[in-house]
Length: 219
Image 1 (cartoon, rainbow, N blue to C red):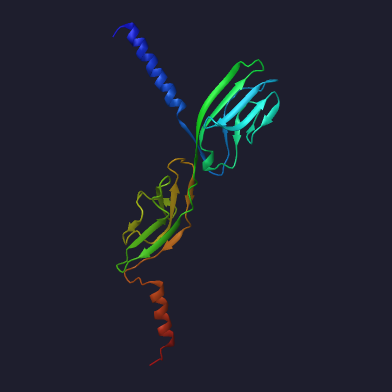
Image 2: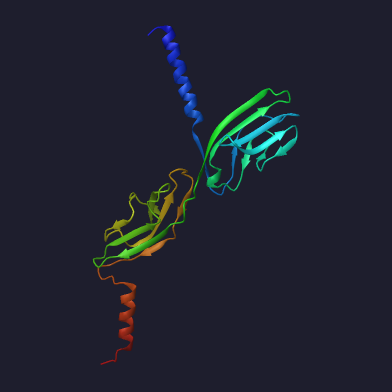
């Protein structure tokens, strides 16, 4: 490979790297707020435009006259609040001076991620005394990572439902769902106390037996 080919290859790789960086999606949580940074200081008589998906006007400032529903600070950053899925897309900002000269332009991709729901933990005891825990909703796309806790200690198991042996089933349990797309978004279920035994019967059957015993005549 000669020097010219080496330089050409290096330029191609750099170009691919820039394209990959530009295409990265910035993730933000539904219902929250997010700032898309432009970092271009406001100037007298300048022109600033923000567009969504390259066509939908979000904000425009033309020589102190402002239109659009967007909010922008003095650095030209677009401030988004009460995020919804419809606000996902490609944002383009262009900042021009009063003479029409382009000062700065950026293109950023925003992905608004749905919140993880608060899970419900259900418990079932088999006739043999084995316990089963089911974290609902579980395995839902986008937030399927599950963590189990036994007496406030994290367990190594990551499956759902969770089948327990007799030696480990008693005590307090809870499950946690973690957003695979935004790891800081987590929700825990309420604690559930489980005490299974080989003689476990359903609450309905236990109530029936208690009632029968209470009304039966004493021999």
